[in-house]
Structure formats: structure tokens, C-alpha cells
Length: 383
Image 1 (tube, rainbow, N blue to C red):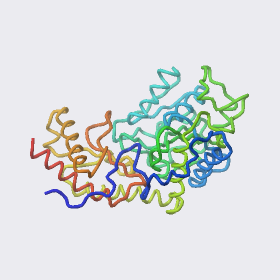
Image 2 (cartoon, helix red, strand yellow; image 1 turned 120 degrees about the horizontal axis):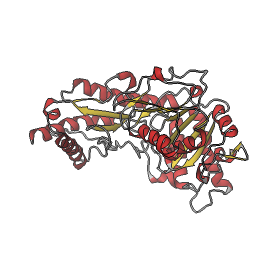
Image 3 (cartoon, rainbow, N blue to C red; image 1 turned 30 degrees about the vertical axis):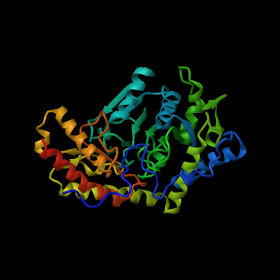
Image 4 (tube, helix red, strand yellow; image 1 turned 45 degrees about the vertical axis):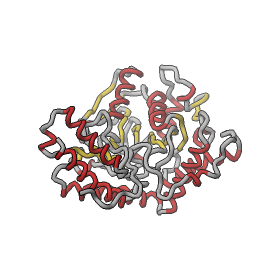
């Protein structure tokens, strides 16, 4: 039988993610639309995003935070093209986005002294083999695999190279050891449920020193330039953005940051994400057909929660039939309006990816899970 209860908000996409609880278009009614983003009031609103972000994350003294174009992808590319090449590079990848950064460094920047540390979906590489005399590029949380680094203990305080961390599905949901991270990137559309197109770039004093002392051998497009005359362009980190930003998106970002502070700040955001993972872990423990892609709990994501189907009926199917069955489960849930956009990423193993970031209510995840049981039974019985 179909479950009786439905999620109040059936939004489980991993990006753009669910808006904060209680959000409506009225949250944007004070947006400074029709104004230049260089105008005094508009620039102040943009700077408010930066200030509230630094406060909420408790960034260390000397760290700067700025808004950049093209979402998290743009922020990562700016870091790679502006900072790499001064020394060797350690590239880490255990899912599609990390693999994309490897491709950019090897095939686009064409750096020669590159060591690759790779692992399959649901796993992470051996962290003990990373050489920190080189620069290190990694994702904190593999958004498409549901596997994360367990902590920052593997990063030495006396490292010689920079650590460049794509943390787009980790910031605001996981504890990040800022003193061990020299570059951190993310987008508004993940844990805070903001709108797309804008990225955030956080730099440590060590990263700033690199920018001001090193010039890459390749030309840098204007949209990537972080220095002028050998000095950091401070305006990027005080509200004078490189390109035109959407004041609607800025207003939405301010709204999300205010909500986060009102509910208890970063500790509460992390607590909410952890509760969402715990609800799914409880369900998986009792399930006879579903399991986690990241089997090791210590590296399991509390945001991009990736599941696989373990039932022998399913695993005995040809791969194309497995993919079709998983998509049918998602379609059945969508038709019942109980869950949208939670299929596995296109390059990931067949299964599901349920977003568990702080804007998702645990009660909605708990309401979704019986529907997964129902949908799976429907597909299995109809085979």
C-alpha cells in the first residue's frame, strides 16, 4: 500500500538545493533591482553577504572572502589558473567533479609535475600518500559520490604547498579546519539553498602571498584575475565584484545567512545535516534492498547522501535494466509528488542521491523513505 504521509517539501535536489524552511518570494521584496551593483546601497548589500559569511563561518584573522562569477566551478577555476604552477601538484579525485579538476590541470594547464590520487565512487584515496611539499587540490565532500574526507588531521600545519579545497557541498554542513585550508570554494546553491550562478572564494594569507609573489606562465582572462600590479585586488573581497551580480540572488543569499544566524549559526546547520543523515542511516539499517555508496561511515557525507540498491534481484539485472529500474523509482515518487530530483548523478553508479543539507527538514526525509520502499516494491513486482 502507498504510505499515508507525504513530505511537506519534496525537494531533495543536490543543486540547486531546497530553499530554507518558510521561504517565499516575499523574502526578495527588498532586492535592489534596477540599481547598479556599483551603487552605494547595492555594494553595501553585496558586502553584507561577505561579512555575514565570514562571521557565520568564523574565518580566521587574515582570511578574505569574495564573490566571484560562475558558481563553485568559476571559483575553483580561478584558483587553479591563478595559483598553480609554482610547484608540483597533488590532484585528488574520487568522483566526477574532482576528476574534472584533474582534467583541467593535466590537459588545459598542461602542468607536468602532477601526481594523481584517485579512488572509486564511495571511497577516497589513501590520504597518507599525499605529498604536501606540493600544492594539493581536492574536494572536501564528493558531491556525486557521497564520500568525504573524515577530517583535516591528514593535512600538516607545516605544509610547504597550498591546499586548494572545493568545499561546495561541505561548507555550512561540516566542520572545516580553516587553518589547514588555503583556498576554499563553494556556491550559494548548496547548503544554504541560494540561487545559482555565483561562487565564493576564500583565501588564506598563504594563498594571498602566493598570488602576490607568483605570476603564471599562461595568460589569464580578466574574469580570473585576482591581482593588479602584484597586489591582491581587495575590492573583490569587499563587494566590488569582477562582473555584474544579480541583486535578486544577493538578496536571497542575505536572507539565507540571516536565517542561519537566527536558528543558531553554524553548529545548528551542522546539527540539522547530521540529523538528516542519521534518519537515512536508520532506514538503511532496516532495509533489505538499499545501502550506502560510501560504506565506511567515517567518510560518509551528511549532505549528498548517495544510496545503492543491494537486493540480488536488482544486482542480477543487466546494467541498462538496473539504470531503467532506478529511474522508474524516481519517476514514481515524482508522480506522487513526494520526491523530486534525487536520482544518482549521471556519471555515478546507479542509485539515488538525497540531499540532506541544513535547509531540508528531517521530517521530510523521514516521510520520503517509506515511499522509496513502496516505489521499489512496485518496480520489482512489475518486472
